[in-house]
Length: 87
Image 1 (cartoon, helix red, strand yellow):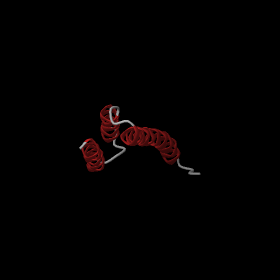
Image 2 (cartoon, rainbow, N blue to C red):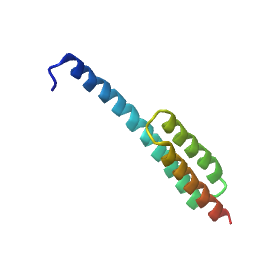
Image 3 (cartoon, rainbow, N blue to C red):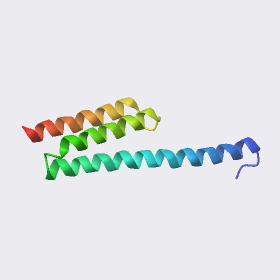
Image 4 (tube, helix red, strand yellow):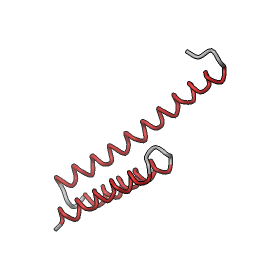
């Protein structure tokens, strides 16, 4: 445990940020998983789930949890999988 007052504050702030970042990442993973399940089970619901997953990824980028290119890569792969499944 740090003895310096500013270091104690950094520990507190980092705990809060870590909790927020984990919640955002978990939300992204859940949205992507729901999309994947919809893609495998019900193609009619897949486009809505793709939209929800894309929004979750964009929100994570806006909050600085994910890098922009990571989110774009995931969205592109999901869209390509949907197009392949519909063809």
